[in-house]
Length: 312
Image 1 (tube, rainbow, N blue to C red):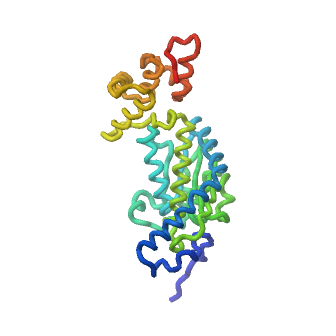
Image 2 (image 1 turned 180 degrees about the vertical axis):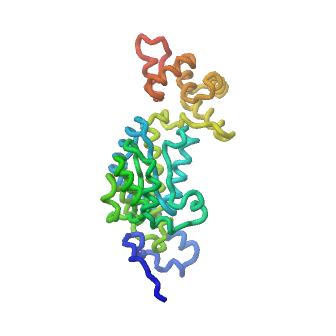
Image 3 (image 1 turned 90 degrees about the vertical axis):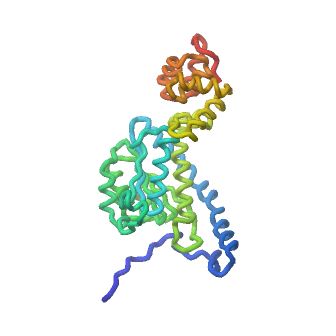
């Protein structure tokens, strides 16, 4: 009985790393130093694609501001990282569910119990992408740059007119011509050959962190470097909200707590109330006109002829 094997994956992540060939012979501390040394290469590799990443953020900001959505498509480590990124935007930036959506090959069950064969099905990716619309952004994540599930999703999204992005660890990625932008983070060979949950996975986490955070900043969901759309859904976050208000306004914790109560828990409204010295209704109206941007609302309230207090 013969066994059919698929062609070998051609990607730098599959190559053997000459710096770690003795990883199974050295003491534990040396194993850890080898891994750490490889990880230290990642910031420079990510820095090399920042101009292209900025293009993605700017395009995504335009589309989401106009009512579009951003979809992540990935399998294995890439898909799990995408699910985590999309989920965490909801409490930390107050993003409504369904604006940034993660699609993972194999569905929710594959998050804990791997279903690796799902990533080989381009039709599955295309079917998952049926919800993508022309005003959306589709981001495919695959370390090798060849995952059929991701390819099927990108093809379907592109056919809909969506803006498409490929994030890979392979500068010669097979799927590169199926996306408008290819973010190829050249992470090189892994410490353990082919173990893309290591450097390739970490690089994708860095890209996702930067993409979604810069997008939230562009959409006005921060004031300075403070998360002013955060949902205070537990004790830790309620405490963080008060810290945000005191940092933003310079007022006492008691004054901030009172302002938050009068603003019905709306952090942005409380900030504008405290800084501009206006009533919550006026602060809320200014924010509505400013499309939720705190600095714009404060500038409008401090403009000559306006009855509000001085902004900062």
